Length: 333
Image (cartoon, rainbow, N blue to C red; front, side, top):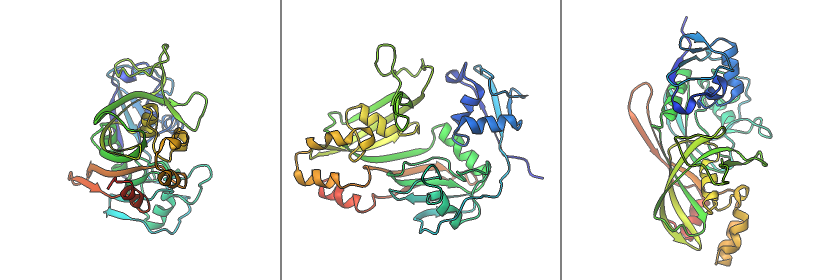
């Protein structure tokens, strides 16, 4: 009988004083406190070789080990869909996700997601939790296009999740935002948490002085550390064309960071883009933006180490049409 795949991690300073279930929820392969609680209740979590309790407050140096459950049969409904696959073997696949496609089932999208298409494509997705996210190691927002790696077994999923946790994954994005960013290069840092009044949005955590907390060494009570670097590629029509690199992969990270910098993504009405359309000098460009069905963010490059072979793998994909056509028209080729 095969053993459940396991993963161990030592608690660092940012985990000191944090509840075990909350700390585990930051692991990409767990991703929620309810999943963490399930693993703890099933006695799959050990702290310094002792069974963990959800309420345990962690200390620096604690060794946390998690055994992940064996695969279970999926109840997800398959959806016939042509997938743009850049790579596939027995362990993983790399897919170029189109804009408009939700990654995994959620409210309003029970059977029309990338996961449903993947279930139709292969029977080999990692199903450790038997839930709605088989094989998913990281996500892209519905309107974001570009590259995703998907695990086909639990060992691969755990290994890739560790690479994300250790920030050894290469992720390069391109984006178009409102306004002319003055700097050629920049770095944005903050702690991200749910917006205090709008649960559909995220925001940087503020200190008592109402300024964004940017000190990585002194974390606030809520929020996860997020760091984004950018390079300005071009400026046209009152917009900036950017290349962005993620050091962390928080929900809505690029969208929040650019919006709070005063440069929301073109087309991103959730984070204030609608209020910036009038600043576009060209009437024609303004009309094109008003008819968009996506915001301008594309996961262009993805690199990781193959868990089985140890090979460093790099993938690259261009913007899809019609976004690519608009970029060319705007001078961002």
